[in-house]
Image (cartoon, rainbow over all chains, first blue to last red; front, side, top):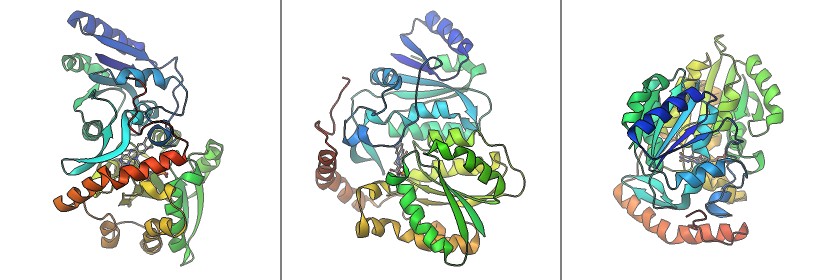
Length: 168
Length: 216
Ligand SMILES: Cc1cc2nc3c(=O)[nH]c(=O)nc-3n(C[C@H](O)[C@H](O)[C@H](O)COP(=O)(O)O)c2cc1C
């Protein structure tokens, strides 16, 4: 399953995605965050040590978390700020921590958290606005490492066709 | 010199590792008469004052935990409200993280240089160091053992006004651990560390296994 999380209020992007997805008959779910309440991560560590796997913040992020653990791909659509995805886009990644456990191990030459679930979810970014492209590529690769998955790439909203070609 | 210090951690001050690091850092910083004021991003009530202080100070230091390879969403939210300064303001960063190897923080560090540019400030470097996850779980001497080295870095910053010196670069420690260290630490993670986590969890009132799957 492909999970698409739109943190912008521009549903023209998801509208076009929907058309492309239908054409390719892909199995996808789209979450529009505009009407959802999604907080930032407060770093309480409860999801690792008090209520393993569960976030202490009871808001709409739970909807996304429950889908991520069944998704082969996670696409986050985000506005940009300061050369990067904006805080709404970043919060989707910060709040993802419950899918990892507190346990640690080495993966290659670097330490990683032991994943909580068997599912591996590759990540892709579709952005609206200006970003530092090289940095975004690098960051997405690094972020994926943390989830033991791969980066699907970083695409501007004008490159939706290219993004869709990476969806399967 | 007077420095505006912003703790960029979303975790409340009482439990923030960054705050404990800053406690030691500012001890060294003040020895030569440097003064500072400190604000916490975790407390939204301080945001207006923090913004004002940002415009009124020409030495800014943001200390932050690495959050998924970059800056925390909440810090980003605050920074999005700032206008670029372009008035010669100098900005430096303390980047600290859970994982211990220097290589884990380089992607975050690279962003901070971009951020300085976006804010219209002169980039004075980043003090990079990991292995700070456990600060909040310790008190007293045990906590000091982790945080005390930052005192010297505070002295260094008050002298140089930047984190570009060799000593600051060395402060990071190894980029990756040699294979034999990885082997030993890997074994410890499977044994003693698991027991330690279980103990903390128990103290926090956890009733589930650490690798419990609530949603499968
Ligand atoms: C949402 C979240 C994401 C994190 N991401 C990373 C990471 O990518 N790499 C790392 O080494 N540590 C990571 N950490 C660990 C923190 O950087 C570390 O525990 C830090 O000392 C917390 O400082 P604070 O108490 O001041 O917030 C993360 C922690 C949280 C809560």
